[in-house]
Image 1 (spheres, rainbow, N blue to C red):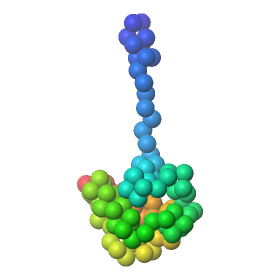
Image 2: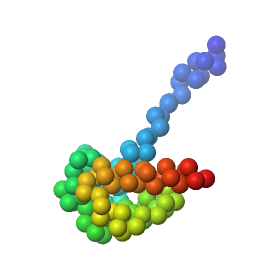
Image 3: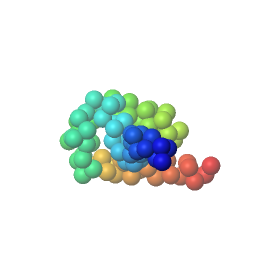
Image 4: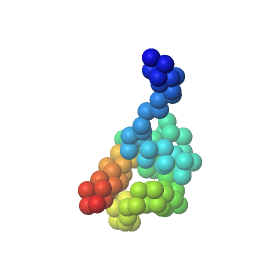
Length: 97
């Protein structure tokens, strides 16, 4: 019984979803408020310029070990499309290992 009481006092932190991790990373790298990062917003509406995108891409590549090509991002009109692309690359890498 004492063991159960001790477990009840532990703080349990929920595991972030991949999407939430990516949004958090983008907010930190591009210095953008997380509340502004809506999936249907265009990268332009969010305020991500080319320098921000390069910084975000490097951070994603470094953290997840994936490669994101220049042409890949040009296909992303919205944050949601960009997240889908990155999530697909991360999933493909995980599946190949």
